[in-house]
Length: 370
Image (cartoon, helix red, strand yellow):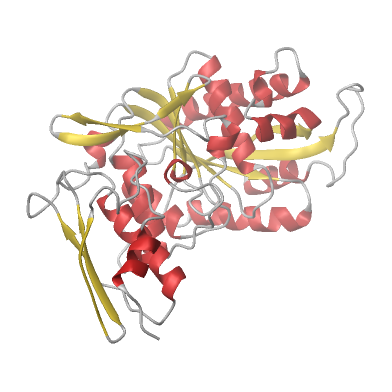
């Protein structure tokens, strides 16, 4: 089957540049298309050598084209980059990009569905309510949900030049600076990214963003253990990790894997503690009633066994689900049992971070040799 340049352009027209919200074809970024046999080549032209989306857009183009044409056309390695200069400036090193960030806290879970992003969202907001300067990176590259939870789905980060380098300005709401890959893709599209594409996106969110002074930078990681986790500990000095789990045995088994990954000799990131989510169901009209749907004290017992801090328990309350769905996080509900639970959790987190910093040397970035 033969394909035309017009078909390639139509496929590429679905891709928008995050800074302008225009498609890359209308912006005149696609040049020099040619097709021979099963090979297709084109040039992706950028106006600025420091455009922070060069790598991401190149990879998104490959992803979209492979979805449209499958194995009929080979684009891999055939998307050329053209900028006004031979080389764009490399992403800033951690020493510069995160130099004013005091603490980096990774929020992880052994398995999906335990409410990790809900906990990360409400914890970040609760930290900000104490007067702390807080940032949040949605590093769950394959399932970014933070924009929805913060009610900023339709916003797009701005890019501004700082000392001749283009930096992404985080979106801010509820007193928290937020960045997510979800800001740069269609919310309805499935992200079918290879590991290298995902890690490249995470590096940009970390190093090509204008975080400024922060007391806490919270990182919402994907469930399980993956390239994203390794990239994080290679790119940053993580103060510590917090593991989120539900109390049942199936979830706890995976939580142990997350604990072992961070505390392994090649990673060696301190575990700040374990959070038990969905500890019990409490009807808001009957706040004294507790129904232990997933078992009782599973995470509390695991924390004791692993000799790590137990940071607290978060109940199942309808307002938590509603808050996540409608972008009004439950920790903002003054006087509620959820606000009280997250206030207690936040106090515990602040305490263990202070103890960790007083008793341990700063975490070293991990060097992993392939």
